[in-house]
Length: 256
Image (cartoon, rainbow, N blue to C red; front, side, top):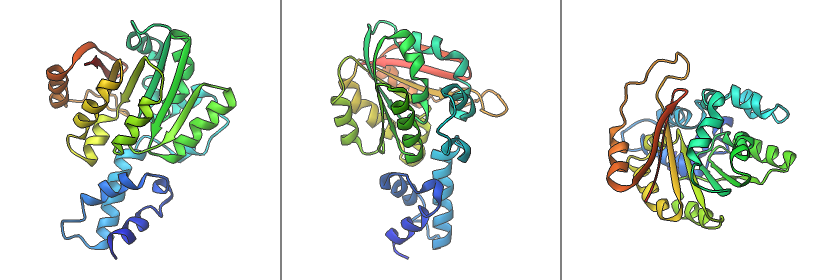
């Protein structure tokens, strides 16, 4: 099979059927040049995509549209450890940004369901979530529409950098970018892309926040990885505003 036929075969599986073509191609390139047979390329690419995109998400969550935001946030692996700390986290991240704010949530997962926690701190919020998994985009947009929320989820790969920048520029200032637990996923597909992304979007916004896990999600054991590569990069190129840990997650906010 040629490259396109193999990619078409990869996305036949339901969990990958709504991923952007760009993301699937990047995953595929990891195994397309090593002499693997077609079946191995398909298997290894799916395994990588699963680690990057669907490791945190159960099919049960993807199919639900009538559960409460609290229920969904508590069930989703990536947000349930954050659940008890939302107000404190957002209180620190929004400090000094006034009463109006545009939030652009890159690699949002289901974080749009925490919208009401934004509103407790800043009354006038515009929220846009960029997410590669089309199933999660539909889930969030259904919630925004039902609750008449000033929010929108967009199905877009973060590797489509120019489109990401255009979307940011269409929002009103002041702007804050979230990159919650997204850096590691980007690096799995393309090394050092996180640095490029941050450098390109930083001039467009008042503040960027990255986060990463400091404890394993299941056993709650400390993760020994230091991530000095990204921390050193931020210290060398940006003004660090805050750096704190809550609920097994470390948050670093910064600007140009």
